[in-house]
Image (cartoon, rainbow, N blue to C red):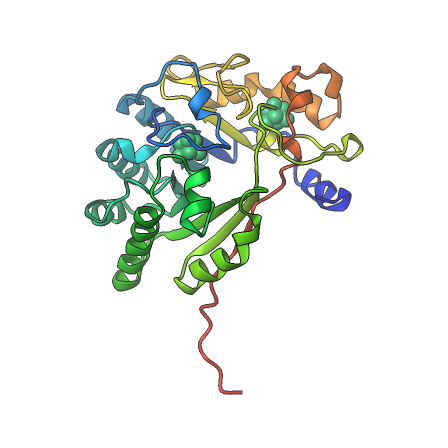
Length: 308
Ligand code: SF4
Ligand code: SF4
């Protein structure tokens, strides 16, 4: 990202009383072992979020800021527990949450789950699909089958089209050396099928992965830490997504309100905003995720045909 693009992002950042985005780790297990993901090396205990914990979080979000973007899931595949996911989504809608979004690798979102998923009234489904050819896709999305994932995403798009309503479907492409040559073909394929394309750069996950060259003179406060809060399945709240094991966490959502936990992280946010990089945890100096920028979204052309 250029200096001016990063500066524009910095202009949107400030101390806010409640996060704009909230990631909910419904399930910390995963059926894949993707090459650019820290999940295969995750050492913290894995489990499934108890429903009462989500109820507690959802009630507070609904009372405080119902427009908060709630994202399922953080580090894990939510369709390993589809009934629980549906229960979370139904509850979120019942208390008035306005933005319920699901991230999936697509392997387990099989046709039989599509109607119950759409019946929850969720707002967005994002499929992580980083390759067009079988060879490229399966080299990145380890243990996944390209044709199954493509068929599942296309089936969901077809049902939404037949219903005439439903969530937006975004197909995410994480740009990497291994797949960038397929982006054009990939984009055309999915836009033709009515999906929105979401293209973003690879994350370093707290400096664990090499990404792209960053220039410290361009450094801006980390947008992740300024806008988003995460809760692990067991209620622990890490400092940021780079704190993948929760070693620098704020506390536990079972024991404190989300607003209080967000407030406890305010000191870190202030250091970011004042460019006091040296005072941040060491992880922030190896992590490049402050430079990842916003994902680019390209929507399909739905304008009517024109005779001129
Ligand atoms: S599917 Fe998602 S959580 Fe699982 S390994 Fe891949 S990127 Fe990580
Ligand atoms: S730059 Fe720092 S605050 Fe941002 S994701 Fe990385 S470790 Fe977290």
